[in-house]
Image (tube, rainbow, N blue to C red; front, side, top):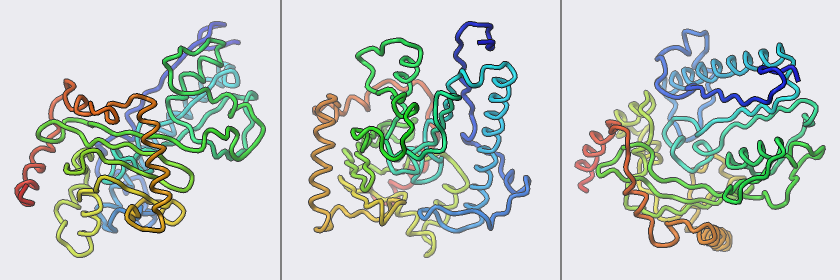
Length: 326
């Protein structure tokens, strides 16, 4: 291999800050994008402030894509592109209300593109569920190194090197998700603990502290400001409630009928069997993995030392506590 470092193996991590907030306001329109072309997620109101915020988000994504293209060009110039596993992904979903810091798809489902030259067959659509915990064992297996027992993920090489489409591994028919504290947003400094099991057809979520308000972890943004400033307006209030209101201890969504996970079906009798089955699967998984939330020690998550500074969300947290009387 005539690689970046001669014939020696190498590892390079490009940790971009795009499309992390804050964005340059108005950059989307300035780049020639049209707010009318924005496809709004069904959980956000149709308003110029929201459309323009999404356009600014698109600009950041495009800049990240350009940087990835430059990296691929460099690998090609050094004649090592086809020998290199290239993985492109993110660390969370879109930084908008009901997106990032939530277990819904717009918060937890992330892009994942993998390229490994002739070692992988493209043009296939796979239905297997994977998570970022699978990346470390993938890299280790590709390098001929045994994965340590403490790694919880599983190598993706069987999927990458297969020539089949659909579901390759029958065991990859669901994924388990979790949420705790994200930033110093509440007063006191506690999170919004949730766990979830997501299958092809349904998502079941258990909220361990439903008495808390779920929305305080959302990044500052023009969209968030618009929801706060217009929360009583008839056309905005339903979206504000969807983002801000308490959510109950359980949530269930039929993803075929409701891919945006808006209508909670947890109390619908026709979904009772699905609810019971997924709740038991989640409970079994939490016990098997010794999750503190399943062992009565979940409060330990709220007691870990936090090294960053408060985010400023406490100000409007206290404001809403006062408005809501609790």
